[in-house]
Image (cartoon, rainbow, N blue to C red; front, side):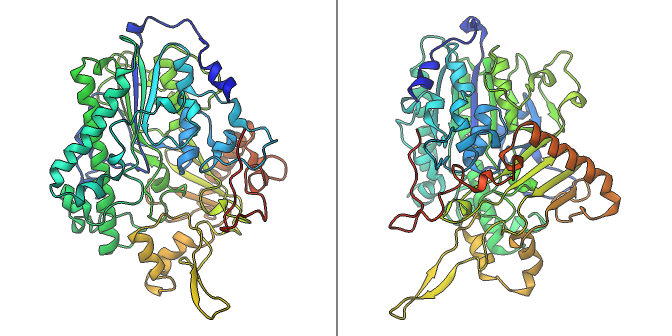
Length: 539
């Protein structure tokens, strides 16, 4: 660990003069899917019809908007580690799974060889730091003293704090001032006009949030979502209210982005700042969202602004991956990467003069997942998936179709009788975050009225799934066995296999069970006095 911190001080290249190097800001919301008013589609009623996000929309209007941006993995740690490294999640060892456990102190962790773009920037003169959540090793952001939150962390419970206040509007302003003061404390630590990288990571869009807060704080009427939910979600008052509350948290995040914009503008530094606004994966607590490889789980908002190098009003329709951010940040600073990233520099396609054509882009994104919550318990195995998303197709490979993708029924757990004759509920580990929507579906398990939705959400899945997105934007009709799509299926199968083998994905090496065993998975049979797997101390 000390060795990595020492390396951070070594210059990797002769830096440009500070005045010639842009500031870099990444506003990165936890669990925020593709929700912003810039994504409204007049031809298709949807969730974005209900919200106004003026700050995200400004970044998109004055820079570039990406219609199909996807994470590397729809789970916090692997998604964020992929952003930091620019590498597909499965190349990041312990950080390929939630909370980055590593169950063998003697095994070599591939993450130990990752430097990451923030330390690379720091080594060439940048001041780096973050606020709120990180969810990767803090040494990759310069250590704990680079976490700037002296004004507090109350913004992370935005709806709870604002809803319960005597004056909700005043409390909203106070919470936004916390964002401002934390950012100012970060800026106060720079030396003169030193360029900086700031990673803003609020968690308010993560579970949980205050029930009814969408309407109370933002005027979002759940009834206006009638007919606008994704087709696979039951259009029920409980689900509509839950989603309206989630969208309220998206509006709070947008307001925080407005604080960052205003602060940079007041200092005269906005136009020399490459500003990126995005999120780490799709919605939590809703089936087919977080931890799933459908667009609902993997698509995120993405807008990038930098007037010096990015054309205003640019719109990119081709799929891109958030692994592209690391090469893009480093290219903006005129610095190379040590991490052999999988991502590509996006700037050539965005520049105002003679941009590269969109057709020259990679044009697809690779996504996947291994351990989340369910696969981290004693004796459990992850639910392994990989997918490739092109402009027209989503192809998913389920490596273990015999396993349950979310949780083994019954969803809510099982009632057991102890030796004294008392019954207790033994809950199931569940890769669907808690909340009103999950409770709604748990209460209706076995109800024939939602049998179709239940199968889509919780039942075992076939080894291969293929969706033709133009005709099936919610990805509900698997055409993998339809002979009309046989050619597309064969092509995407080959392309996915080629990429996984090229990057030596542990899921396709040898017998393909590396993620099922230590050091990736918990040691079988080892639990503590509370019935939990003890976390091993990593080197």
